[in-house]
Length: 398
Image (cartoon, rainbow, N blue to C red; front, side, top):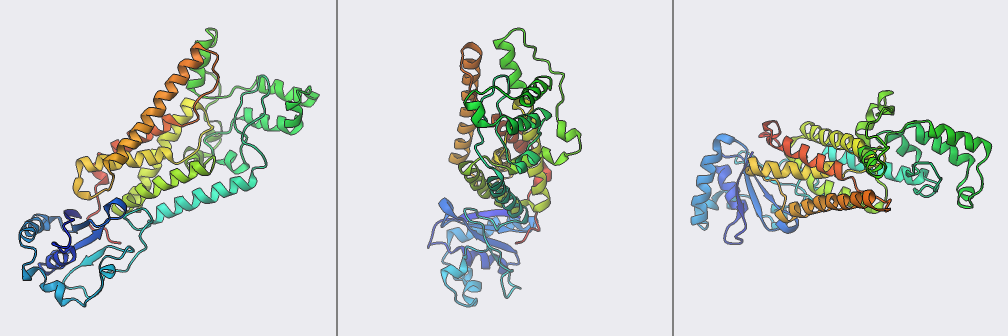
């Protein structure tokens, strides 16, 4: 399927009349209206690659004399309908001289120019369901109490522990400790019980991977700390919990986090699934999700969540397709792309500032944004977008 033209000169040009004219010439096509900032712009697509050149020639002729009666012959022969019926928001219109009815309509996605796809709906449903599930399970704050000698990390709900990239034995011991050494006792600086003290000693002897970043900070702040690491990586994954390489993408910390990720996922994901079909779209999601999750784990340890690595990968994928195959009609405004790039690069620069402050000062905090996942997802998405395998399906119909 190839984009032949974008018609914006209304009412001088009638996109539906031209679409019917093409159909009358035996050229099967689709007329689609944009949404949002693209509202009022109509794209005409041709399905058969062999007819693209002919269709482009016909459009150049039509654009010169759009009021020529021959362009309205097939349009006028159709039953009279309203403008809303011509371009309903629920479906693109397929025109062919042999068709007496349009194809079955599918509900068009909110904030997206493509219908809701099966994979997109499944992922969005899982994201929302898991977020609600975690909120119901969570009994207190995510922030852990400060215990001297214990690595600080969020207190997760049971479903989150089962789905984040790894949940090391060290933090299973931490959870046991918090059951016998309560937050109230810790805040009052009460001495730990004998059982709590034994758990703390066991934790001190249990190696735990908290990322390359943490080891570099420790090494540069304390020359005696080595960068090399001999402890276990991928603890739960090596035990057979292979789903963890992807499922962190389905989890989110709070409402603001899930809102923006879901919004971007709808804007970008629907139009990709609409063009690629569910199988290739799923490959794109899995590839960007697994790569970004793994890179983030190696950089910062297991405590990260969110679709943002996949979302940045989708944006980079669309950018690549716009470069190698602009006729596929992916919608990604330059401003949107620049905004995402500024965000990712800006957060990366801020992380470097925090890193320098941690090394040369007493500043202990770090930025809680998965920069490595963003960058990795973007690189993988862009590289996949350059492959011919992800060219649009010519026989795609919704």
